[in-house]
Image (cartoon, rainbow, N blue to C red):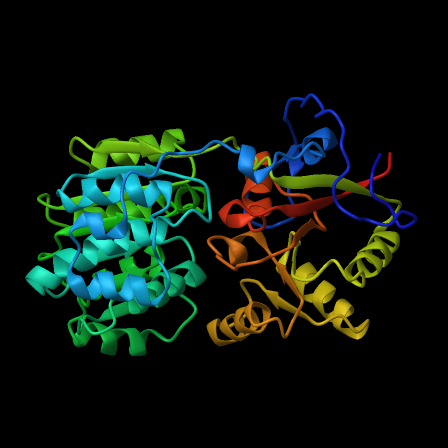
Length: 408
């Protein structure tokens, strides 16, 4: 049974989980990124037998934050912002990073990976005070900015500075930041490579490299940029690599970039069992829009991310929703960084209840309390589907994912 416009949607129906079919490649996607779109059996979008959060796999937490021997200012900042017990990825990787090991951390989205690498970095900087010593690479502007926000929260009172270097923003402001000799440089591979080629990033003193969302950076085609950047860094350094998956590409760069890395995996199954998943049948594009509008007007759809395939389609859909009285914003590659930042701020503060996004624009977003993810356009691959629905049900909370499927 699928969700449709004649049935009220109250969330949790029981039923046996379907057997999933194979992915077969079909025609090239119209998304304009050169990837081939996979056929995904609609049964893979259904999971009504959700697992209780309490029944999910439990990783024993062996430490409190006070056990790590972090700088007292960091400990006080953690206490101030309400961090008490570390998450599993933090619990297992922080001691290794503090010991100076290279670390590969595998964990699902929304599990605290940012703190897992920032806290050891800040502890090291509290002792060395070295500028231009830490380079953090992330796949998207939004994730780079989120890392910088977390950095500021954890480093209050430490007089440490970070520069954020991402595309879509005037480069002159970033050059000014770099001239101030920041301790940490956070950026996307393309912009970091550009600044290195201009001689604006002093890489010879960098002693720490962090690759965040490594699998996504490779998916987005950054592998050559990453390799060019790393080739300019000192061989003697600590490298931390965090990823949701250990793909062949990620395995290859860890082999090439890291020395005797310690691996930690706290991943659970590929699709969160606590996310209720169902499909919505539609006849044609007009019917599809009508169903979406009807759904979004239901009271339980409090904070919703709607995924579309193209920049143009995402913007047009967001405008349509706004005309229907649904508070909606769009983020996609044609938006300026200022527009994207304002759209995200509006969504996070609940001024807008709906965020319409392309895959690339939404990668790495960490927005709390998203109640629903709606795949208005189907993803290009099942991996992309897993990533999309991971925007809800974060931190072990329940969530709902709905995917539009055309009637055959």
